[in-house]
Each structure stands twice: as C-alpha cells, then as structure tokens.
Length: 264
Image 1: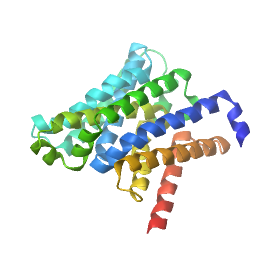
Image 2 (image 1 turned 60 degrees about the vertical axis):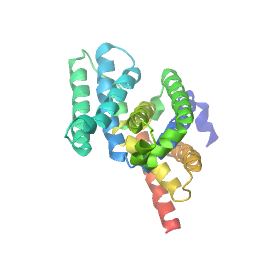
Image 3 (image 1 turned 180 degrees about the vertical axis):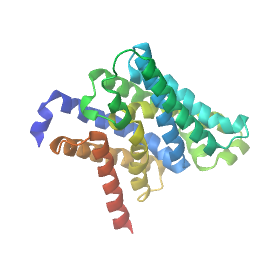
C-alpha cells in the first residue's frame, strides 16, 4: 500500500486531501449548523463561472474562481435583504446563471479546455504544485478569519436575530461567513469538482454532529474524519481505476450510513 505514495502525483494528491479536509472540516461545520447546504451548493456551481473566466483570460482557473465565488456568495446572501425574491429562488437563479456564464466563457475561448472535466467532477490525482500552494494559502486565510471572528460566527450560526438585538452586525458577519464558504469552494473544486462539493461540506460535519454539540470539537472531528475518508477514497480510486471525486464521495456516504446505523 505504501508504495503507492512513491509517485509524486500521489504525494501531491495526499497533501491535497489534507488541505481540503481542513477547509471542509472548519467551514463545513458552520454550513451544517447554519443549515445552508443548498446555498453552499449554489456557490460551488456559480464558481464554475470563474473557472470559465479563467480559461477565457488565460489565467489559472482556480485563481479566477476566487473573486467570482466571493461575489456570487455575497450576491446570493444579500439578495433577500434588498429584494422581495426569496433566498431559495435566488439560489436557483444564481446556481444556473453561474454555470451558464462558465459555459459561455469556455465556448468563447479558442482551442480546447483539456482539464475542464476535472473542475466539474474533480480529479485529485491531477493536482499541481501551484494548486497546492493556492489551497495552502486559502486554508491559512480561512483559519485566520475563523479564529478572529469565531464568537461572531458562533452567534450568527445559532441565533441571527438575537445577534442583531445585542448589537452585532449579523448581516455583515453572515456575508463574511458566505465568503469563507466561497474560499472553501475554491479549495475543494479541483478535488471533487463543483458537482460533488456539497458532499465534502456536509458529510464529515454531519457525522461529527452525531457525537458532539461543541463547535470546536465538531470542527476537529470533522477535519480528522475528512482527512481519513478522503485519503481512503483517493487510495481506492487509484487501486480500482475509478473517478477520484466520485469515489471520495461514495466513501463519505458509506461512512455516514455506518455512523448513522451505529448511533441508531
């Protein structure tokens, strides 16, 4: 088994598994507690517009997806504050528009996008050193923001109305939380793709929530679980020559079913 990791691409893939697990363990805990799983899915699909923009401009699609994802996240979160459109409707609209923008940009780009499939369904085995550097920096940013605003995020996640009553700018904190989700989407996009991102956001935190209600412990357990399960999915995808993103998601789903059965 260990000889698998003598290959550089497997070493990079394992490092990527650890890096994405950190972001999905930390931010995914807020996603599950705040019950914004559908919103996180909309952000991930909207991020595809940034990928398309990256191809069109000739820059790294992951870098292009960062501002695009943040703008999309803030747009989705703020639409219910400035319009009469429900958040659910806004999610559906921006979900579709983001994907459509990505397709249009790719269509306008001369030539062929060779690794487009990896951004849709993930390909952890093709992660480059540049991708790892971007993931690492974004993880540091995410951890720093969570540490600085941990009390505010905790208040908004459990009781947004009370946060407003006590003088906390709940809307601004909520927008910042959505920006964190957007950054996490960029970290995850190359590993499981925009189609399957919600699984990494949701399942490790959902399993952990069965065993603890303490947010700090929830994040730690979710991160450790994500590292173990993502690495297992990576190894199985290599051994059986399966799509890496889909295999990782199936391993996560199996772990959730086992955990639910044990707790039940």
